[in-house]
Length: 107
Length: 123
Image (cartoon, rainbow over all chains, first blue to last red; front, side, top):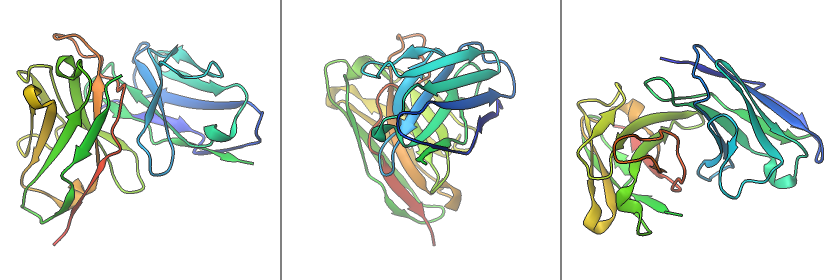
């Protein structure tokens, strides 16, 4: 099983600042990496697929990068609605696996 | 964009059964792969099962293989997850999610998610 490790577990950021979240795969997954946002009591929302492609309706302040085993989600200027949990997911190897999540909280 | 709504969760007993449903909207629902993903209380996400557009191809996580059955009824735009031989560790919020892959090749990432349905397994 491909283990996905996210860091940091919690990131404290002020509104307007940049947030950088990392996701590491235990083995190479090419660009087959998606990012999701989840707020309390809500379903996850797709942000990024293919490592860097933004899903429909996702603001340009969200960007994904990386390939192989190291991936990054960057939120260029945090808005109030961006404080949430973020998960990465690989879909290159079976079974499909998610990271443990990174929480972005208000500093 | 297709929207999905889960139902059927509740309290189940160890060894018992529950049947979850995922109702879809939109004309393209019957052309989509559908997945079930669960989230353990306070924990992360775990993929459970998937089914292709016409119901002829199914795949399961090892943890549920032989106990859960995924099926679909495209006439009623519904996907079911029959959960048998329930275990305490099956307790989770169960989400269904859409996959815009082709008939033969799923994308295996999840475009639209429902709000989930809670399954609690306890004696």
